[in-house]
Amino acid sequence: MYLAIEDALNSKHPLKNIVEKVLHNIRLSVSDGIHLYESNDLALLGSLAQFVREQKAGSKYAKYVYYINNMHLNPTNYCVETCRFCSYANIKTKSYTWTIEQVLTKVKAASEFGITEIHMVGGLNPDCDLNYFTDIMKVIKNEYPNIHLKAFTAVEIEYFAKLHKLSYETVLTRLIEAGLGSMPGGGAEIFNETVRQKMKVKKTPAVTWLKIHDIAHKLGLKSNATMLTGIGENIEHKIEHLNYLRNQQDKSGGFLCFIPLKCYYEGTDIKDEVTEPTGYDLLKDIAISRLFLDNFPHIKAYWVQLGEKIAQIAINFGADDIDGTIFEERITHAAGTKTPLNLACKEMEELISTAGFIPCQRDTLYNQVKIGQDSLLLNC
Ligand code: V47
Ligand code: SF4
Image (tube, rainbow, N blue to C red; front, side, top):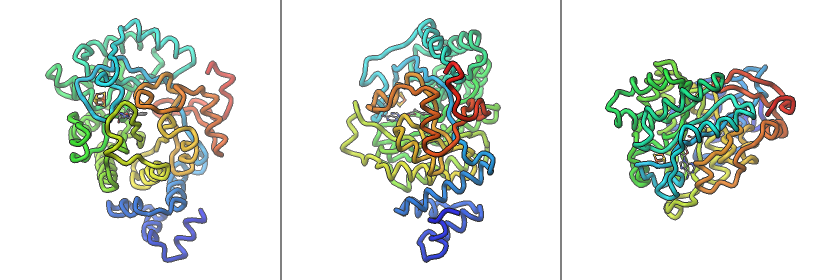
């Protein structure tokens, strides 16, 4: 048992009731979630989250931290939307759209490093319709049948449905036929409408985002979920967001992983209107999501946004995954993150093992690809 947990149990700690609930596997209420955010006892939050993560993994896997050998593919940054926190879309930078040949060149380069996943998302571009993407996917799958395509946020699915006047089911079914393997968790931002209006987020409100994931799960796809912080939200908005996700997971059960995201501001005009999350806040998001989202198997410490050092602390605060090698991430780098554009498998493994854990390379669906630190043996 962690010392911080024992101390809380043996004292009049304000979180004692919540500690007892966690230890007895009792679901936390919305007000419990808010109390956790109000607490500054970071050691206790981290210990509780780590306790839950270990219980969930079981003793055999308690020390495993997952990563994936993957690439990010963003075929177009032209976007009809104008979300104020976004530096990636054409509004602020020059727009580009890749041809199928350009896409294939990039995939070929990454495939030589043994990637098992392509994470593909992009702007909402009328020239890049369903046919553009199904053509890309078919060509990739034809050439690289073993690479998993994790692609399209619910925002893009909503856009294709509007563009082609099709139902979400039909859009998703066509994408599955073309090789879609799962969906990433982006585009959720913060579900709260007041924050969304200030940030000029006109796309995909909570009900639609959740509906699309619900349909995807019913069609047999797994997906992820995110929450973007540092865009003017408060702790009630965060717990409201997590509660939406927990309720959806109760219904459809297809979420694999939750990823708290942190906004970077370069190229945006929002910095003076919002509070930038501190290191403390980022670790609270990791720990509290582990505690509140009792039905999510995995919590990801996205090293690209957290930075390698906070990611290492986060895997001691309830996270069991640090994402991937991500050849050429563009969205957060456009907004100013200073993390490298990619890390080799060897560096991912070092990051995990120097934090005291066992690196485990996984595939998109969390099947174990390789355990331990021997990537040098692979072409990786
Ligand atoms: O949806 C937009 C966010 C998301 C900024 O599912 C920004 O495994 C920071 O969803 N600063 C895309 N963030 C990233 C994403 C993701 C990443 C890694 C793994 C997975 C997964 C999903 O990035 C967008 C948006 O919420 N974003 N602008 C910005 N300025
Ligand atoms: Fe477009 Fe997505 Fe950027 Fe919004 S966050 S402007 S929808 S690319």
